[in-house]
Image (cartoon, rainbow, N blue to C red; front, side):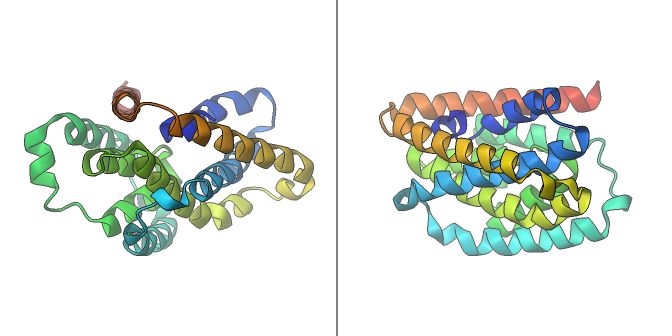
Length: 223
């Protein structure tokens, strides 16, 4: 529901809560499947607001990113990647000079590559595209609907990885079903709440939420 209103945030809360209820081997794959249900249903409930022109470049970049990153996974130094991602998001949102300079090189092929590929190894990369969409689009509904489409692609590309992590998913079909149903209902309620909310206020909240996440990523990586 939280992600339905603001575009993200629900996944991070879910990741924080799951360890209290399920075994460690199930956390990442179960989180991924639930997030896939959350993002795909959020996209379906807002189809008219999705900027479909971004689908092809983002999808191609995502496929290339997942294939390349998985093949070189053991050779990637990931310790300081979150620092670069966090600083990029902060500067892109709050520095007009940086935003204007970087916009010449921003490509949804590259964003798909980074969000999906690096998401396999450093976690919360979804807000990268959300930061760019918040800068480029003026409607909260277009921002969140298009971001949901992009995150659906990223999570779908990770499914083969989830199933290689653990075989116990097949013995937890009931739990997965309940969580998927909960995610879809939450997306529906969150979308209804967002459609009734003030456009400018929601966009400001999204910008501040992304900024807090970016600061957390930088601090966690350095400390």
